[in-house]
Amino acid sequence: MSRSLEATRERLAPILAGLDHKEEESRDGMLTLRAPQDGVRAVLAGLHAKAGYELCTIVTAVDHDEAPTPRPQDTGGARFEVVWQLHSITSNDRVRVKCWLAGEEPGEAGFSAPTVMDLWPGAAYFERECFDMFGIGFDGHEGLKRLMMPDAYEYYPLRKEFPHGGIEPDRLYKAWDKQRRQPSGGTA
Amino acid sequence: MGSLETVQGALENEGFLATRLDAFVNWGRKNSLWPMPLGLSCCGIEMMALVGPRYDIARFGAEAMRFSPRQADLMIVAGTLTWKMAEVARTIYDQMPDPKWVISMGVCSSTGGMYDSYSVVQGVDSILPVDVYVPGCPPRPDAVLDGLMKLQKKIELERPVQALFKDRTADNEWLEGHGKIQKQPNDSVPQYDPSVGVASDEENG
Image (cartoon, rainbow over all chains, first blue to last red):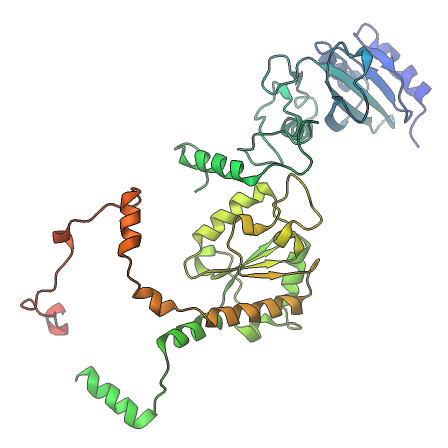
């Protein structure tokens, strides 16, 4: 049994003092912090350095575009949010950090979150998956490339506009051929 | 000692068998199918049972699992093929020398199965020419053996020797027209010159 919400809040209060964040309500009872895009890195680094969060359990994102639930009102126009979940083995508690992202299109300036792979090396794979599924960039990531889908894939499957049944394979073949013809890359 | 005397001696002393060359080649091919096992998920476990003594695929001459595509004639796609893996599977298939056949083992490789998903190829026949589909999730090893026997029946119907004597003029013209091969000038083709004769063993040392 992990610590109660109040105990975690109390433990983190001196560490988070002075950092730009606010606490949010969560339905599962996990302490949830909301930080701005330019300040989330400081929050995460503080939690890593002073609060003993040895483990980054997941880095993922949420697409809040349209159905089934409407886009939240208090996002400042943002559509995507990135979520980090941290676990402290020594203190036996968890914390969730969220951050709204500016921009929507992959490769767009600002449509990226700071990397945490220097704090938790294992987060490098989560960030690659997040890039693969949503097209979100991670500033400072060494080798941000697709993880699950082929390198030549042109789409981001977990975005809301992606069709449920996937895409027709023909376009993928063309991309493979194009990749093969390039002298630097390719497998053939 | 000419070869004709050798043949005559063999015919007199050993007996002989008359057959069509097509049937002879097919007999050899169908009884020595060397599989390239592409075990992608749980079907791969059933494929391992296939090789073991209980089901014993060696009875059909297909026990030599080759992990190099250069040594294989039969690709068994056993399991869920993802798009990430599809490029690899196609490359392995391209590396196998002709003649080659493909068995699609299980519903995942045949149709995508229950994975109606963006990451899964909805049937490997969209990237490979499949000869036999074996249904099941996963199929029992005897079902795969049945598929193998059906493939052997299919190989019996092929005409490998006739294909050697096919008139390829139209094919070559198409390939030249599309820039796939370069047209060879006629004088570069070696012509038979009776005055040169055939080099004997003594001359070659």
